[in-house]
Image (tube, rainbow over all chains, first blue to last red; front, side):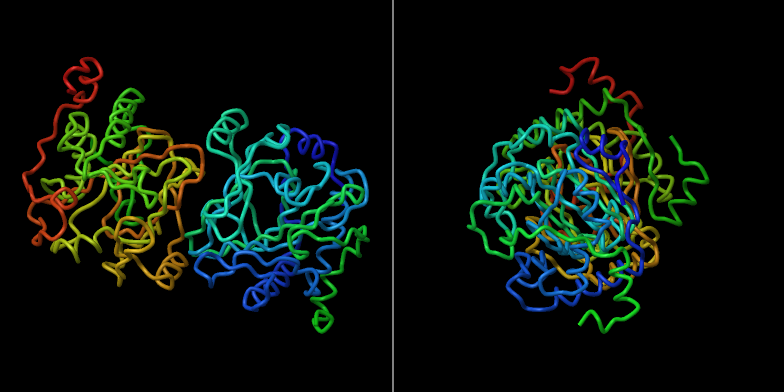
Length: 266
Length: 266
């Protein structure tokens, strides 16, 4: 799987590319069931919402879950990123954001590279995100909002927000967001489960709370070009990985295999 | 202004009717400026968000503001409601919900008549809401979400939520909302400032927080058929009115007059 010249150009201009239904309903169902199992477990990698109960984020699931280990090396995710970053990549962060029905909380306006740069000393923004929808993402269940083209501003001033939600984040102030939105406008890509959203690590984004009766789990894989690995190990290993081994993509049917032979997932 | 047979039938079936651009940009700008002036004032009728600063709701503004006094008797709002309720009406509640950019908080799933019935002893659901958009309402700034057809369920069990936001509300539990949404589906009518949304007082609705850089003020006028007036005066007079005088609609140009002669608004 390769991006077309048009898709690459669009990524450069807008900071994101949306690819509907990259994974099949069967593959997505497998991952969704595995995510539910992980949310219900009590591991330090599973961060809760402020209520202390609802799962907010499950980090580093590719380390302890076979379906997600395979997803992390899936050619449909890895190949397009290698193409855009121009080289082999390693996994900087791998998480599932749950945004549960009724209780999923907001993510304030931020740039991911703002955190990777400040907290992890990642040298350059030669890294990016892939979001894989495990549920249908609609206008109702807290879709990701982007400010189109905002990645071209470089790293913007940010403050460390440790109060709004249960997870600390370098967030942008209101004046900056207002100004950027006037220029680029907001966009909230939506689509069925199995769709993929690739976006630049400097793209300004946020997502509102989910008060709808529909869950909205999204897997976020953050890949970094190997030579651009982080220099500072301040955050826990399961939040900012220290294993810079280049990903060797698996076969395209690596998830389908698990559906055919579920025992392999144990 | 009268609703067509088709619009009335739609109201009966779905519980709401959306009427785009009922008020002109000039009329809407007049009301929006007045709303901003009211938010900045320190009156007991202006309820703040949990942060203690951002305006959440301004109640009874038609009592102390000339533009809103005229809006409350505007024929484009009053006539269609008289038609649907089959008689003269009085103002049960009149408020502006601010849902400010970045800080506007959620309204949990509820039925308005659930509160009017329990707290105010309003005998029957012969009352309804009119929402007038003072700002453009988009997918980004916390649009109202309805469960279509849910008004036909009558009054549903509810619990008194005094914790989630700064305003107490009789809210529905998750299982009920999930079940109703499976049946009717969600809908979030959106449109430019000046649009009007009329909805049944038993229609189940909610609205998410607004983390976008765009304000989203909506005026809510709750009208009740005069014979169906409330029997219990437990809530403050400016939240549940005790003046049951039937509204006498003003002329269609009652707001345009104020734009032509601003001094009349003092």
